[in-house]
Image 1 (cartoon, helix red, strand yellow):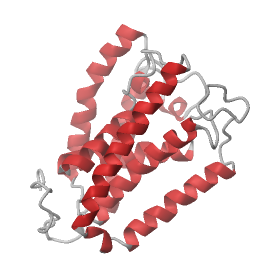
Image 2 (cartoon, one colour; image 1 turned 45 degrees about the vertical axis):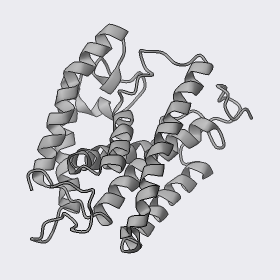
Image 3 (cartoon, one colour; image 1 turned 60 degrees about the horizontal axis):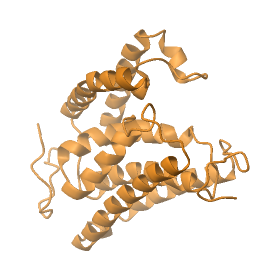
Image 4 (spheres, one colour; image 1 turned 120 degrees about the vertical axis):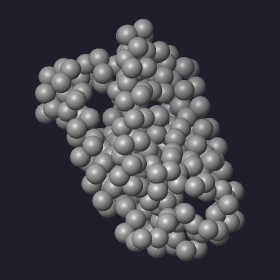
Length: 251
């Protein structure tokens, strides 16, 4: 099989195949290890690995766009990094580099709600060991692991204000995405129409009302995420020994 080619028919991806189950198992195992080894991971020596992870994400994303371009698949109508998971990827890179609490507050929800759903029901044509398989799962796994790392190791925690910031961030993007969709005949964020095949959006009403339903569902699920990961003590969540961490917002 051509590892970097554009023909997926020789080895198409199948949901819940062996390769898919292995990836989900890796997700669970590494997530558990982050929690169990959180005290050891607090050492300052891990800072270099945080930067290395950020660089690796940028590198594999750049290679992905090169792959689409070489294969004649790159189109402005659907290849711009404007989908939620693409935006989450860049937020992951920014969080690893800057360690800003504000970025964490947004990424926690977009990663745990968006990336996790993408991992369980991936929109993917290429199976192992194609490049696209590695790109898709590496980027989505890292989004989840990074927010769990910053939660359990760095001590970051969401507040109810975090949900407000998430809504402000996403609703601030909407007019920009709508304008871009109109200019390039795109459907980023599914703001122009539903996907052509059956999807969960079919349960949320017709266009454009399903957009409001998506936002309501986002708020409900974000409250669930906040409840699970909130700070359950009265102490501030800012680690005193972390020189990179800025003062939390609205804490």
